[in-house]
Amino acid sequence: MSAQTLLDKIRCGGYDTAFAALYGEAQVLAQRDRYAAAVEGFAATFGGEGDLYLFSAPGRTEIGGNHTDHNYGRVLAGSVNLDVIAVVRPTDGGIRMQSEGYPIIEVDISELLPVEEEKNGSASLIRGTAARFADLDYAIGGFDAYATSNVLKGSGLSSSAAFEVLIGVILNHLYNEGKVSAVEIAQIAQYTENVYFGKPCGLMDQMASSVGNIITIDFADPANPIIEKVDVDFAATGHALCIVDVGGDHADLTHEYAAVPGEMKAVAASLGVPVLRQTNMETLLANIADLRKEHGDRAVLRAIHFLQENDRVVEQVAALKAGDFESFKKLIIASGNSSFQYLQNVYAVHDVKEQSMALALALAHRLLEGKGAWRVHGGGFGGTTQNFVPLDMLDTFKSTIEQVFGEGSCHVLNIRPYGGVCVDKLN
Image 1: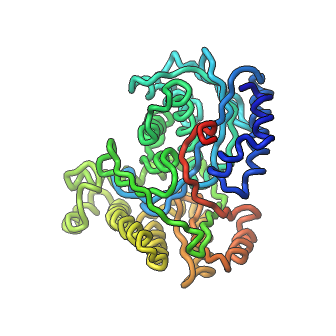
Image 2: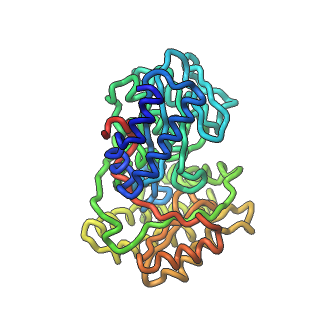
Image 3: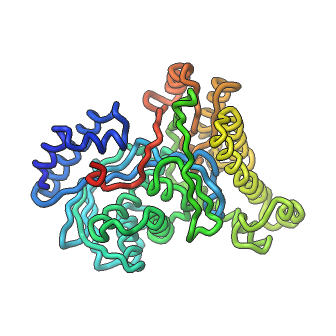
């Protein structure tokens, strides 16, 4: 439908069912305005004629398994009610993407090899996704898209994974009749970020965004990950899920992120395996003296974190399935302590004066000890913390945190039951 027809349908409630499913009933009116603004942005940028479609891909919250996916470990994650949305029109040309507030991106999809100048930029994600679709014998084609996102960059909610999944979902529905699975879209997205964008990420972020809901994933065989839905209503536990954005600077931190899997895999290689999932604590401890000499103490500590955290995910899932939220909270705290002490991804070593995440964790500890839970969230190095806050403490927690890190720094999130979608299909 044209831009005007689409606007009329949105404003008259024609997408309310889809909006309620994605964001909850309380957000329907706000999402009407948000999607309408995106359609208007599309029309102003590309014109309002032609058949337009709506797409959405969510951010994700990592609940368990901090930095385990890249060594074929286990994770517990969920998609959240913050997302990147796009108004899209198929075309006969290349891909043109206008993200609100950024310059327009144009990608010639007849040229699919990596472009050095595009690394670390959105154009590389678009080109890489199209290239991987083509490599896998899926159809590709051009489109115009106007996108807007409320997944904060650097927030630990994986805005980049949401963007990658969005491009994959668009190509899937426009040119492949939706036959590319959510799992394969996530794998394509990871390949794109590794090879085209230049960041050696694992697969958790993309999988949580693409598949959706609360899931536990076992990456022992990364080509065929085992995915299990975990039925739990966090609201029913009497706790709110809060993500605190500490406002840390993520500039020039790619080397910090890359060092985590790099050091873990170096230790694994010395133990005769490619990844830590294929060894165990007994073998690590038996060789610890030599490993220290070869790789240094930090690498060994990071390997210890992986082996303990990987087992911890199993315990977290079991606690949730048993309805034992108190044990679950203790495991969340243990995960955070391990990330701080062993994984060491709370602050960057080149700037020890910047420890905003450590401060947020200290405040949460003081406020929530014996009542809630707190931990490092996502990649770390100054991004966000995750907190499970008793509902009767939510106002106090939020106001205290925002006095330190600024208004709007504490985000109260809901788990979203869908991953990347063509919104039109939900109506």
